[in-house]
Length: 236
Image (cartoon, rainbow, N blue to C red):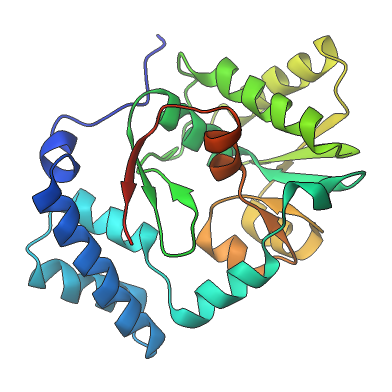
């Protein structure tokens, strides 16, 4: 049964007021300070979560939005403009991008972090389920691909995730019907694969951005280029 990947029941209370977003911004500032001085992410989020009395989903959002000074500089140095994708082979972090776009199109809260990336609070949790916005998400990737002038787009999906074969086939069918030079691969460790093998990675996953060669901020690009309505929470 299809559904949306939208807000949780309490999300408007957690993220929908200036009081809460102000508290989250201060928590991200504290996390930035701690991470920049070598504190571990988990310990930093526990400290800030306790200080500002954050709920679990708020802490999740703060962690997603936070980065150290070194991480911010490193990610910015490797971020590419769309002009750099001309004639290139681009690898795309399949579940990361699809779920982020599904969440964005479903009206879920989307968080812009210290590195400028957009992130959501959804995940596959071992099983991927298609939602009403899945096809539209693939169409948005196609619009980006055609405008970028990239030579080839390779989707990388998590092989251990249940239903990864189904979304892989959906992407392949779409590319065949629309004459797109797309490929798909199933990998046991897609994060490491993208970091080690992709010349240009499309992802918003912080670990990938820290370890890849170059990356492109697809969700940020699509939000501006396609003028998508976004429930955006600016965390810095």
